[in-house]
Length: 422
Image (cartoon, rainbow, N blue to C red; front, side, top):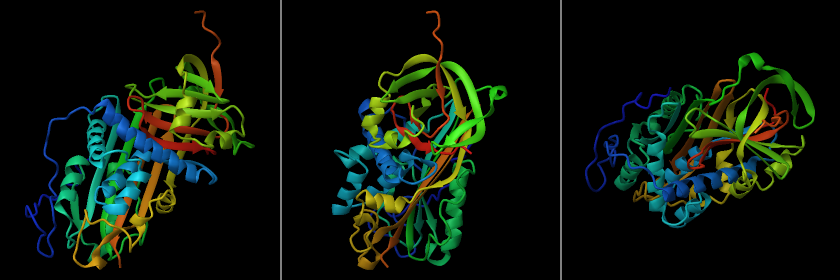
């Protein structure tokens, strides 16, 4: 289980106003004060989940043309970039909020995200779910105190001082160790070699870890070799799990949809399986929150006989910088045009911040007992420089789309597809 307290945050407190002297950290680095947990309202749930889900399907749409398996965490990417956007100003903020689907007041959105994060990290008796954030900032850079206070209090993201100027590589290894700790060692190398340098000033990191057991587990004795049609055509042998039980089931537009809950009933895996072995392209075409709603319309408890491959997707990386810019977030990545003066506002324009890179990696393992999934996102900022009827058969023997989502809020925590379970 990830230990959120493995690395104690720095507890220095900066002066209450103005910038610190050179070599000191601005703002607060203390952990958030203990406060009463207030349950998010339905409006707050909708505000965050709608934005994260829309971004997730936008990203999926950009990547679906690539071959092979695909897996990432829309919630992780939304949170990491939302923290960054909170310090954006002028046209940079407008672009970022549009891509992130932050409608209405950005302040209200950040408040909603913070409340939902608190709820996600509440103790769960039946499963493990941790969504954690941290800022790693160059120790000589002058960050704006309101930004540090907001990310600390709202996103529970304390600031850890780093020496990127003199020791960028040790800093990269330090951040990767923190991510590995938070994800139960599933995400080990989020930041690749040479991804940080002497111009790095801030790395904003989000990590998500989930471990849940099926409410109705598969019997290992029933797992047998079976066929899976890789790419819809190439028949290969892979371990197939088998279970007959009552699940939420529907069929719409030639797609079989079923939902397998995890213990506790608050999270579930939703599988979208086209009837046609070559139907993945048609399923993925225009896949968004609206299409998901149409496909899941009419879900009802029904006895179904499930045949599902065991699968594991490791080191799933997506070209996040390119995708976010392709979606319209261009100014934030521009060394000349970015306006992040809400994060740092030095008098020398050469010391202004922009996003130099963004990284995302995910992991998932599905077996007879349940699911383990993890993901992490890093945004790197630099200076310029009745008689029971026969069960419905669902044989998942060809490419399919799957989601792990919160059944209460419908937030998509993880989204992916399996083209080859081997």
